[in-house]
Image (cartoon, rainbow, N blue to C red; front, side, top):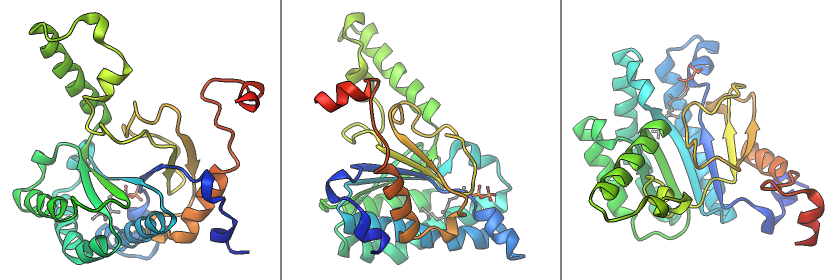
Length: 248
Ligand code: FPP
């Protein structure tokens, strides 16, 4: 039986989040420049999006560029921004064909105007698609996102629009850039690193974590199925005991 056939259809996650890591090391192993690894990483983006869309998974969130990544050599940052534009150009028809809605979170205003514009265009073109929602985290920092939410709530307090007693999880969640999107059920990180790296810190509270040594450019549908099969062996207790879960 293939890996895909082994998946239990009604135990699939609703939301998969991925930290795409290892492009640089993949390129180095091949004696190539880092940007070659990033270009080859587009393959992993395509494979994981298509696999999720085919399986009926509703949300896929990819960590494409962190606020810290701006500190990389200028030549790499520029190449990554160009790659974003080129990838949107080359993949927009696939997104439309597969009923995928593109979404973006992060400080999009930090992106070069050309990239920001191209992204806005793609968001608009795919906004009526209701299959998979593919969210790209770009110039994203979870700590910044949480601080921005706290600031917005602080303003509402100051203007007496809310009381301190109104502050709860739902209120904070409604001020995050992921509002309306359920929390990830499964977080995948490639390349053998076992860190969260300032990605969706609030939203990952109860996510199952899956780490693989596969470098991102080699990540494909089969690797995603492996992660999903592993996820399906987990018992998600959300703080309860196994016995309590059995009675539910
Ligand atoms: C991490 O690998 C990867 C990134 C910082 C960039 C992710 C970008 C892509 C997968 C390119 C295509 C994506 C889009 C949305 C156009 P790394 O450079 O940190 O690898 P290393 O740890 O081996 O150095």
